[in-house]
Length: 269
Image 1 (cartoon, rainbow, N blue to C red):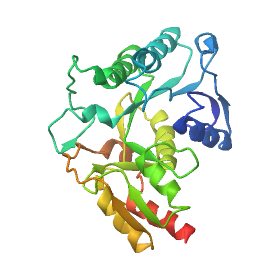
Image 2 (tube, rainbow, N blue to C red; image 1 turned 90 degrees about the vertical axis):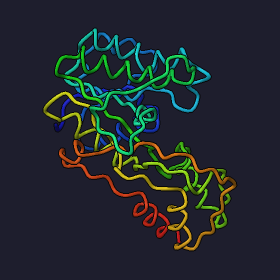
Image 3 (cartoon, rainbow, N blue to C red; image 1 turned 30 degrees about the vertical axis):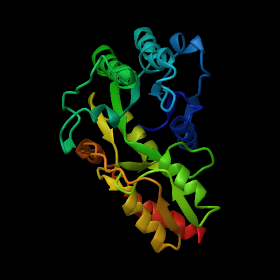
């Protein structure tokens, strides 16, 4: 899909801001409604990218989490003034599955008695509404761990990369054995635009397709001249690896985190 009207709900956030800039640069007429703008229920929205959500503070703000992940999107779907809608979810919904690899069609498992599952359950409800109540206009993007190095970028790896600008001896509050699937913000934006143009309703894993440990990333830093130490020694089980066949079928192949980090550090040297 190229050009036309697009609405980025949550354009003030980490992913939404970069997506809005990319769409505008590619000639889209981009609307970025402020939080609480009821116009999203009354005006034509074109292609909607639903980027609103809570991450770090979801447990402290459970009712805001439900509003952001499910209630608002349900009202947008009910109003129906959009051509397509891409809902941003998370690969953390797979964390309860005892499998080394997971595809998008795998049934999810949640414990409703766990108060910290409000994030997963509300995201799953948002996905359900998109896929069952938006007709053939809904798409779901399950994002892995997104990183960047611009000031204020959230997440462990983002903070690590930002610190590398000013520090060559890094002590990190984590363990070298922790494994995650990391995907750069620019690759996420590329994926979301491709998903909006996908011919059929579906869920898409937006990930690199590879789990990488903190220790492996530290090796990249050390090869570039940095020193890295970790305060922890925990060896938690790795999360399921999200398979990305559906994403690559759209022509999107995210870059591996080690290559991206090596290029970034080379630019700092």
